[in-house]
Image (tube, rainbow, N blue to C red; front, side, top):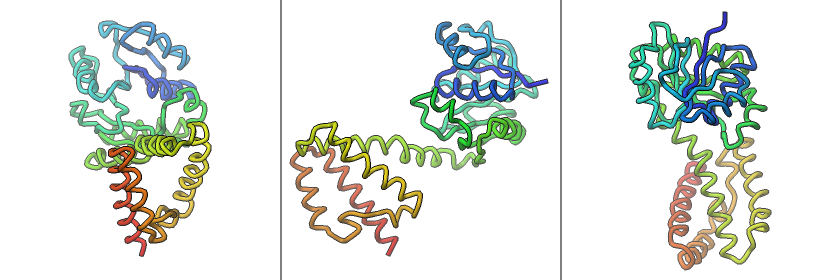
Length: 270
């Protein structure tokens, strides 16, 4: 008999994981609790199973409780499960925050954090191509053992984490994803400041960014570095800095910080 699963806060991540667990016959999805009934019904339609509810009073106990709510709601949602007496001695409660550990749940046992290392901007696309997704896992030994088996059943790759490293792990993910977007936005706006229309700026930036990122993972970050700092052309860097100072001081400061970080990286290579 399959373990039962209830999802609290089925947004993009909850919907994708819920569909994986249902389609691979890992858990029996019992309920989906969202703030509004329409949202819960939409999640149910995406996942293909479960009963949609919008009231904590209608929530029933399940073997697995997955909290895919915003980070600042994890603690209060876990406390609500305790108040409603929905956590038994064998219940596993896990959240999907990349930044917070299992301790955020405030439970003595059965607590874990599961973080799929993907961008969920397009849930349908992620759901269709979820196989081989890397998922970090941290928390209670019994809970992580059960979740490791479940993740293997949906063809995910599991990376165990120590609780002490969770925050740095998430900071690394932010560098690799969120701040990469910020950096590319800065490049595009700088192209436009040079008089190049956005569409052409995108065409200029795309091959540079894509090939550079490919090189980082093919030959390593230090070997992938090219450009004025890599060749010791600090006069060009100074001209860039001067031009940016006249256009946008915030962009100029960002360029300066990145130039200094790149110089340190080059020195490590030598």
